[in-house]
Amino acid sequence: MDEFCKLNQGFDSEAIRNAMEYAADCHIGTNQKYDTHSYTIHLKMVYDFGCKFAHLLNADEIDTALAACWTHDTIEDTRQTYNDVKNRCGEAVAEAVYAVTNEKGRTRAERANDKYYKGIRENEVATFVKLCDRLANATYSLNCNQRMLDTYRNEMPHFCQMIFNERFKPMFEELERI
Image (spheres, rainbow, N blue to C red):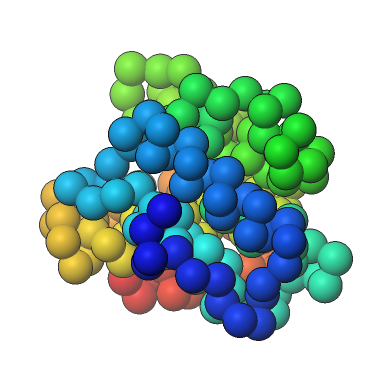
């Protein structure tokens, strides 16, 4: 696993560490890349945004949300199933990961359809994780990939309309700044 993957000292738990190791192994095992980098760089960025905004969560949601930050792409990208995630990380993490997993589709719009957004809205931990994911993607794009940044900016009104939750307003505000 990359040396880059270090847990934030304030949020180190067995559940989060287990999720980090599981997700890293899954992405490495399928040779998943993030641009030209190891995919764990993206997972760490999502987790870091989770740590930054963890104060918006209830105490009993933090481990679940941060574990889901690590595992958010395992079903979508690494041939893992809901039950694989559930067996390794627990039902609450699996529910959040399942909610943020894109639908089948040929285009971004088909993959992020109304059913997809409904699942995210119905699970506040999933909403938090999706926002962390979008913040990580937009930040990376700002620094390295202008084409995708333009895509995220164009999608922003619809994205916000579909999953806005007042509880996570500071995250939406940070996304707007990017």
